[in-house]
Image (cartoon, rainbow, N blue to C red):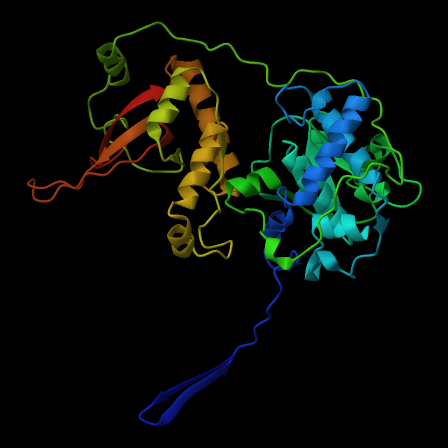
Length: 445
């Protein structure tokens, strides 16, 4: 692109900008925007439905429930069954493995869609990863895309969970989930060739790919469920004219579902809510406002490192859930649509007619997660300091100084005639402040 700026017939400046135009089916690699790889997980591709129909038949033939019902039964065994059946259905199509381009994880590559892979029966490790992930997502499971140097494979959650971040660059997070039997990693290239392996073999091979002594360095993992919350939707390439497969009555490779390993079924045990003694609202206010001087930070709040602001679009829902005994996890500042992920917030709001960042924060609230205004690296230190200070105060004085404040009322005195109010909320430690800045009602956290 050549840009010329003229004024009064005189050229003032000239600039040449090089643009690289990529086809819709090309992923730019981790050097561009890695999280966009989740857009190539396409569960609505027509050929994916064919695979799920065949997987359902595999389950029925094994005498098991043939529904593709994801986590509805809330057992790890059921999630394993579905993932195994999808594996068996894909194996039956005799897909051949082809080598990916060199350093594809850095520079990107052309992506084959599910229908193209299954009709032409060839695919790279990344193609197979996205195909298997598409089938898992359509079956109601939560896949994770994992990239190492020169290779790609799939993780699948055995529980209805996801990572707190869209992109994870710490392999230890995956190792912990695998050790807890909350996730399995699947080496998808084992489903190819004339002698494909069983699902259990693929899981064993996948676990070795993130070992501390693995030959290929870990790059990153992309959580597809978290990507959907961040409004990264599947690409619609229906106009590309790609072929669609049909159910085959006689698969070239006969492959059935295998045995199910023994899991310790302990997921999603409901916690019994703990209710404090019923007190009337006035009594609660009195207890929180024993000190009515400006030393009470509930009346005279000043933001500091001993406080953590929470980004919450609906404080009423948060208060209701806390009253019901729900627990929440505090996360760092959300980087969705904050200018760092390459998407235009105003353009997205205009096209979708909604606030995508607000929707992302609201979805996190439903999952029991609260995003704060503090960076991820700083958050842990602040939480540790809060914990130590409140525990020390309780042990020495018997007073709880940790509060969750909802609905701050802030004002700026202007000649004692006009005030400008605004609202906010956060978690903090009661202490000493300076000038009057706000008033709030609070409950212990």
